[in-house]
Length: 145
Image (cartoon, rainbow, N blue to C red; front, top):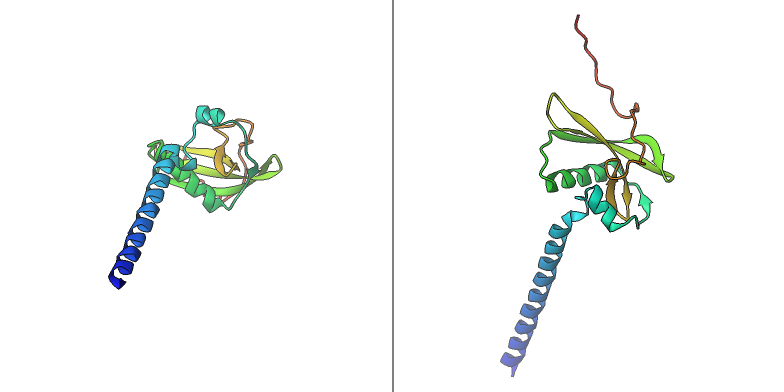
């Protein structure tokens, strides 16, 4: 009798473990096919609609989301630096992420907010203001001649 009870408990553990593994695998597949919530382009953002509340977060959150997007799009970059821009979009603070693509050097600014928890940049929605500002460190300029 005790052996049967022990076998049933062991079978329950294995079936519970199998269900957990299946759920984790399904979640990973869903995350990979959706691009992790940060790999949208203008077309894919438009197809998702504009639903979702506009929010902001710490610059580190935007940096991580931007890196996920760059990797999902298989873009080569040298570094990403994000700082609060001092501007707002729909009453929410904008975070500017500068991305160095390493050509000449070529740095692109992406002013960002979160829409429904997903990264939304000025490249996705041109109505997000992203002009030059004085946020962050100013590099020392050296001129010759």
